[in-house]
Length: 521
Image (cartoon, rainbow, N blue to C red; front, side, top):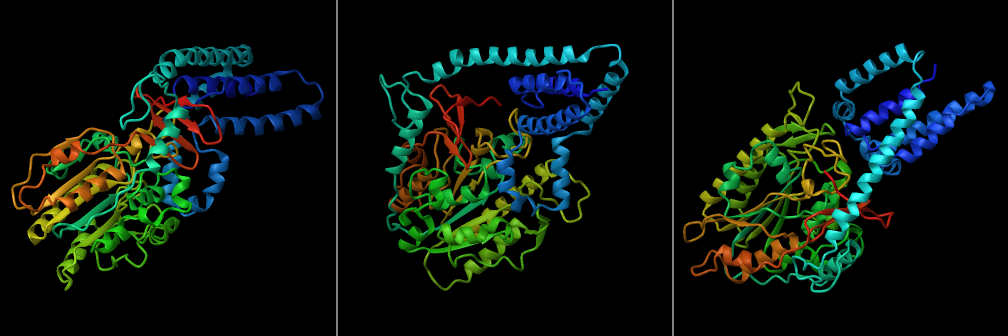
């Protein structure tokens, strides 16, 4: 008895239930190959062997997992995952409910295969996928690219009037504009500290999903950015984007190639009188994270010790993660003891919310299930630290800016936790600004809904250097926010580029292709 018909029927069902994206033409060719009558046993065995290899590779390509090339290139990083985390990821890929359903379907197939010619239904199923795909394709140009190519001005003054916008022309114009943008810091009119809290794995989509968007730490900030685009979906490039934030947005490749030294944030802060410091709540060993911050991020020799802070979690590689409050409190006590009157600029990186993180004694193996309590603790810790900063009496600008989201919900293209495609669910991150110890009571919260990114944030900070919010008569935060230029939504990584067209639809393109396709979550 052959199981090829079951293979194709099962894939058809999985396609229409959203578990994979079946490529109908390769499947039709494979079905024609394996269903064609062959009489000689040797040829039959060779065909079966070749068919199995093709079937496995085709199924992997349709699964939504990273390409085999990408997987092999990241093998050294995957090898660093703990056994616990590896098993958790396998559990996300294949649920026991799905396995039971397939087992039941296989039992029915075995019982009826002698009476029913399932190969015919398999071919019809593949053709049905093809017809459905063709119908979707005919709808996309009419409702998607045609509307997206309308003559609409971009958010930052890009092509307008009679200029027809296409993804390629928008992308070229975007990076041309970004190359011209640069912040030149002015010496502060009055000294104040700057604290940047860089948080791994927190997007608006994640925060809303777990119901913590109204946490007091969020609602009590003086400024909230609802459309801040972190532009990257992984920690390394996201950290470099922040640390290179004196310049406009670079391509992913540009982050690692001949960057202008004037783009570095913390050396620029040192140039206007700040003492730059870095601090992590982890060891920074995985993927040479700490080394990258020092060598490519301008924090060489600036990382402070986190030893002595209480341990809170175990990471996905089974290393220790320190308490956010404990680590920051320990830093603040050292800050208070500094003899120097120079203001301090701190870069703090937290991986408390990273996928795979768990409490040392936790029995639960699913880190997605523990995300909400970890986020609750993180925000509580930040709120407590903020109160200590306020109690110190030192004027401080505190910024919380996540690296990227966790992709807790997943979508039709990526399972929960996967971040290979830098979608808006991953890169639109909750960004806050606190002004602590101003001479007048804090203003009502200002919500900034325009699309912005790193260079806008540091332009805002530079404006505070020129016209300090800690002096009487300073411009309001509302006025400062209205003066921000904004940055159109573009994200990219090693393999994918995504942008938002003027009709608010998202289009993406693989970097080894010239074809743009719509992002459909």
